Image (cartoon, rainbow, N blue to C red):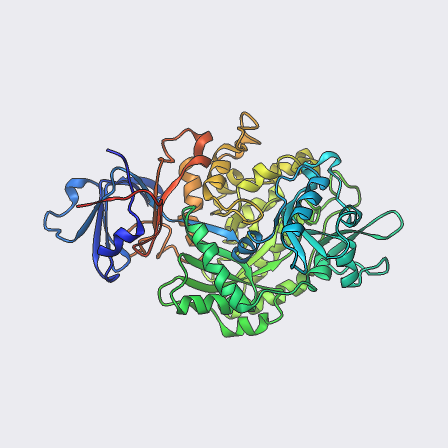
Length: 556
């Protein structure tokens, strides 16, 4: 019999109200018990939550008379959670120029010109995804390259990691950028040999251009966010930790939550750089009545990214003498804001990529821990990308969660060792070393920097390879995780990183019935094929939010 799933319309007979019961049996399900993935055959749902799990078909009570579906042997997992993404950025990226995998600066310019020609009314041309490391010569592009084709409209193109921007001369003219414009604290304007801006702006210097770009309105944001969340649901995500939102996005999310328009769950981090951050902190955490929206953390930036050499290192970059990256804010300033956030009940999540950024973030948390209980200090370092070996044990000792994106390793392998050299690389993307030192790692993707598909990250964590199976044995294969460990990063661990391990991240009585049905079993497929695993359905709170359109489950 052909394995099928149910069209959303077919479920109308089931859900006249969320309170009705449902049993899905004939499953190849997996849940976590005592840190191990255990199989089950049926799930009993009531009022949007798991009422019971049945390990064997014979365990199902013969007295059950409620609604029932045949899972037809499909694999069921707890809904996947992305612990670090940018939902608004994901939504906007779909409306902008796509520069990912551009072959050269000239190829990028060609894409910008094509976009301009098809969007004649846009005042600003915006795009994202270029990566000079993948181009011949690996050099930064320049404004002149854009000026040759586009002089009449401003152009602003963000690098793939979001930590550098490429502007044309019109954009720099609007921003008032000249050779006398100083580098802002925590930022750098790349200049030519005569001191003239070349069109590349690193980290905090990006604000010199971006502040002149009109923001989308609140109503536009309210319209865009659900569309992005529905796209993420198709990938198997039932929850996303939105890494740094401003006050307008807070208002948009609250409106959507009140109107029950959030298709999947959002755990939001306030942006520490928002102009209204003091008021947002003083307002305290927010949790919607059905746990679809939680705002109880803040994201603070410490340094930049490795690809643009903005990540803060203790010693100079191996491929650039006398350059150690950028600290975007002084440690004292970050500590004061972190204290304020902790005092008002917020989790503190610090972006740190370089080994100095991670060291100083850990120092801040060590000071915060003296002011609160260990449970209250369940803070995070976002990315935890390059760590001194002696700092690795400090994560577990301080109860700090490394929130990591495994796909960064396979994306960065073409330049990371050039930046860091053969010794520092041993503490980079070091998932196994962290786990061996009892750290609990939360898994994410950092979309739209990387693709949002969580199975890409699971594949990277397990194989340390790209989608072409390179390198053959994996990049620094001693850091590989098992499939079971990688799945836990994107389920229980991510839930724990949001104080939600008693609500989501697993399938057990009392948890929300957030789960996915898969076309393939991740525990059974060839490891090199993990990134190809397809999601057949995504359910949140016992309701389907995505189904493959041509298939259906069988009613019983």
